[in-house]
Image 1 (cartoon, helix red, strand yellow):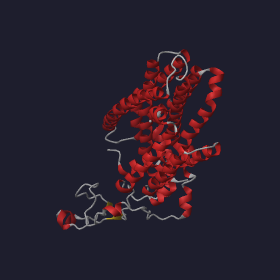
Image 2: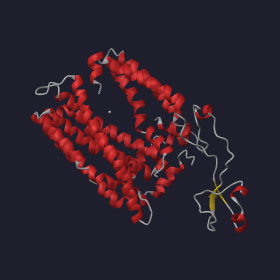
Image 3: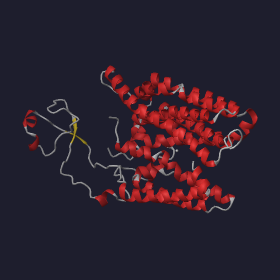
Length: 413
């Protein structure tokens, strides 16, 4: 519902507006008194909080090209202060966005135009050319039917201009185009294999992580662990360690690997080559989840549980990172709509698993719950091989649809 407005009016107003709403949500949650309040505040929180699943990636896609509970707060200040801190931090974030976040959507105001070039033009020096051709075309090329005219005299925007509340797209399209972005994510999700793969992989991993976090709080307060809330919170440090290691490794590995594979492919980069960097991390996901389930079921020492959490996060962080990057590389022009589809599946998986978790555990035990989830996860992640092999033909098959939806975007460059 909200992403189309980011596409039309820019990312900055959505950052500001959602931050203000989240301040209100934090204050409301801290003063909550009854169940209707709880339901309503969570509904509003999820509507506006879901923006974080999309708009940050949209900002990254604007700027860059290819080349996680609060145990100490609950113990020391009470559970209401978890939400007071939420409101305080969002207030600080709002101020930061007001004065430090410049709009990343850039309207060029230009277009591609035919450029007639001849020997006389090429003989002129760069200083004699008021409208130089784009550096994307080799200087002196005789086969350049189109080139971008660059006006180097355009003045730089002032600080306050860069902090304007909205940056409205100059692209054509009225309310109908704006509303179309509310159903396009579903179409992309159900018709584009890369979007469906990313949604399934991202969704099952986040849902598994949510299940592990929930069961950690349930089981670690009981014998033989009898952890206090702050001690349960410290268990999350192992997640931080695992995620950090995975993130630090996957970046250089991915970049080095795609460069090597591109050289072997006559210098041509294909987005599917990035998926190869997932392979070394995939075994850590089922290993960590299985060890976690077996450990809680059999009351194994808490360090084993911590290691299990670290192993799972060691695999999850790179997989989530690379799959989102793969989707961005493949469908950058419709990445906003594509990520909305990914978020829908992610939230659906998490909601379904958490609602089913309590009766599921009572029926078969945490061990078999995790075994079942691991089997589902393995099937989903095995689709990585399918995308590596057939991803390019899939993209070719959906190219016409991609181009059609790309034309409906508020695209400025």
